[in-house]
Length: 277
Image (cartoon, rainbow, N blue to C red):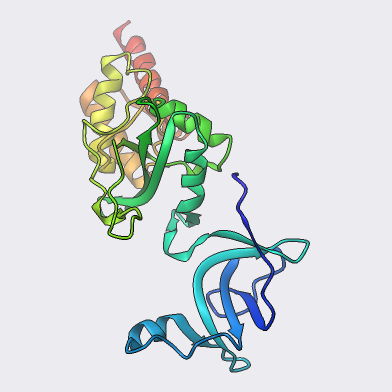
């Protein structure tokens, strides 16, 4: 993964703590939120009681008053503090906690990418997935599958965005930071396509079936049914729709062993060939 910057060591008179969500010390080497204590901690924000309550806390075990920074970090072996992102950019998808800034750092390191923003988009009632917005460098961007393959060298699979959207420039707020709430929803014009178009009508038909079941607008050949939000109940529905559309019976085992669009299309084609004999 891209290396995070070192913050250094606490200044004289300040105490820095890495705490978990229960305000307990994070385990050695583990990531935690950075809290600051000591003589330099203020009483709060002037005439802003709600903001004060959210940022200034008292530890229940010793009564220490701390400022909650909103930054994530971990201790290095030399006693310095390493920055690991922001809590307001940390999301949870399929049980995994993901730091969007970490995904953005990986994207920004790729050739052809000038800048990026990663957010969570929801489709349907249960599915949440990462969407990456990319500004091209010198006008060009890699195809979707090339982007995903490059990211797999830097990030675990669960941190790979499902959708990639091309923007000519990022929307900015008055402070010059990315205005994430103004990022547009993906559409046919802005979504970055795969570098290889689906070669067969079976894949095109299967894509339509999968998109309707998973409530996902754009699906490429190597997209994984289960990583897109599929599970055994939806798989049973998928098998029924494949039977109705293609006239073949695909087993549940075949779906689990061939979860990509290309893999399932190949299984369908093989069964259609056998049926036609």
